Length: 496
Image (cartoon, rainbow, N blue to C red; front, side, top):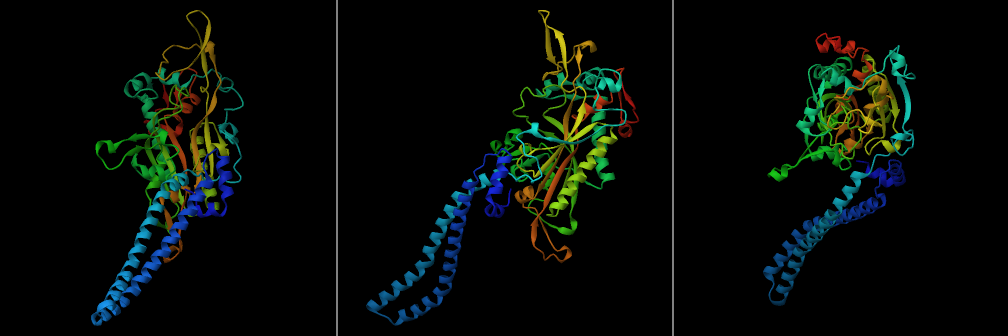
């Protein structure tokens, strides 16, 4: 949630921010509702003050009139009684007016909140302007010695690569057909050494953050209340991507949602709390199962392990004081953790500066990390029933990848694929979550200020298995286990 006072002071900044993020939100209507609500609240406070004044003055006045009433008779008595009734009626009339204003304010609140929740955080001025991910800008790339990203895989390794779909099938690492039988499209089963490699990556990623960088490990729920999804900025815009558990239909008090990232629960830990500035920054990491509906992704990356409904992810979250310079420094530091992690696995990658149109509502800045996947974008040629050549994507939603594909018909393209995303959010989430800290250290007498937050993936699996398998494959069809993972694989050096 944005700072409403900042919006009042500079509405054009937020109008331009929404335009640059391709967000349709009525800032003028928001300001109109805000002005009206503040006018009603001001009038209500004035009436309450008048009500309090009359209540204080009324007691002595009524006491004086009651004293007169004892000595009065006839018309004089009637006049005094009417004056007492008028005095008593004054605060009651004010109470009715205050309650009427309560109703008017309550009518405004839902629309005001609905618009306010959709106002995006303006992108930082140094974020490049663009419409979509097509306008993202490469920052830098890395590859290990002996692997040149400017050359084809064949030229680097001396043989044509297989896709991860072929590798997991031939090495018995995954079962797509049974995954679809169990859960439908975009589901899978990892088995044997495939499952061991998956868990090895996650365990290594957690140890990497805990032992090398001092992060605190947390085990958090993956089923959360709606206000956690709203508070972290995933709702209302991302509601169609979340799995909804309709508990109210079963008579429970509230519905629940499956999280698509450990960020939701890590940030929600301190909802509504006032933290001690001396305890910041808080550095948390978690491994959690994540769920995404992938709504709107029909026909996109339907094969293999890239775009799936359920996966496991190690996530890093940092909560720190409200200082832009410190937020920027931590953003780079968190990216450095990930680069060191990928380099330890010898996975070529690049960093992409996301443009304004690809930031999403909650980010002031975001940098994606993409790993090189030699089999990504590859197609195979086969002969159809009529004898004509036809292009067929390797794999399908049903996991049908059993046919042998000869190297002579293989067209190797390769492409970068997103594996990490590092976000700088300033106080956007913390305002929504009402997460603050008290300035002044041990004195505890300083002002309360909304925290800043950042997050970044450490490893998401099984997607990270795609470059692991494809980059480290050997000509004989086996896969070399990177040295950093062998201790987590029981010393196994090679799969296959």
